[in-house]
Length: 373
Image (cartoon, rainbow, N blue to C red; front, side, top):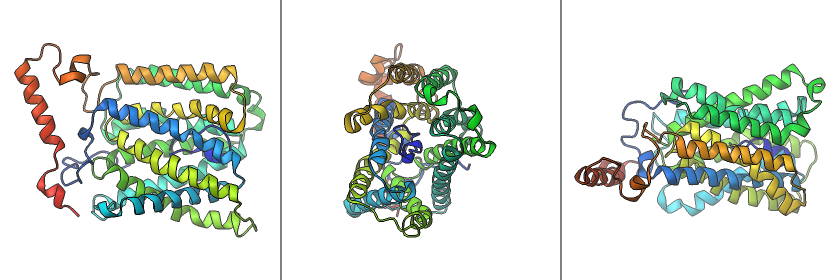
């Protein structure tokens, strides 16, 4: 999910074809896999909180000295071990071998690992700032691709919110972007654009998987598959180059694995199942807003005025989709009356009561779900 932070900078991009849910895809999914199982407000809180947590990645990578690929594998292994041991009694991998699931999990991991590598190529052939900006075009691709691949309408409010967020990102990166034109390479720009598209597809695949699996199952599969895919590069950059992990690298790996990955990824995935993927993508701009704050607190790096100004625009974009955007399933934003008791203005009390009973029944796992492997 988080991309640019892995380069040793203080900013990052968070962190999916076949993303369109087949009719009845949720049937037979484990309990907790359905997006209707939680409120939209809780989904927004989980996704926003996840990106604020993952803003810590940049500061930890800057503090460590290991190659990016080694830190990636280390954090994924730590996260995978923690989730496997902590959830062993709950059968965290139940359902991953179903025919409609395992190809999507492999696609998710391939997109995630491929996007990371493309981003690294982009920053090395252009700059960190340019690579970040191209990577953060992912929400634009999500808005354009979701109606076609996920059959999820992109409502009008998404586009001004995207504009605000992109302007805010440009303000944050402006000092680094100035004068970069002469240093750009076509291959670097192409890699950055491809990384943005890859991350958009990754999000669409994850959104589809939330209708089929629990969040912890998706995250567990993702971290172990990513670790396996990136292990050859990590070995080449460490063992092949004669590099030995230091104590600081191990501490950074533990924090990245437990806090930013096991916790952050699970929050993001759980929230993704409750809200529109277009909205989740825009909230991803909160990560480069929080990253400089961690760098200030942990590394003593000053927070510039342009960072605060750009961050304010990004927060405004997030509030716009939260307050004015449609809820999952095409429902309008919830009113205070809806949030309190499920009764919308003009809805008879009996209808509201019936709606609450239906929602409660939908949230309970059916017998075949409880018995699914």
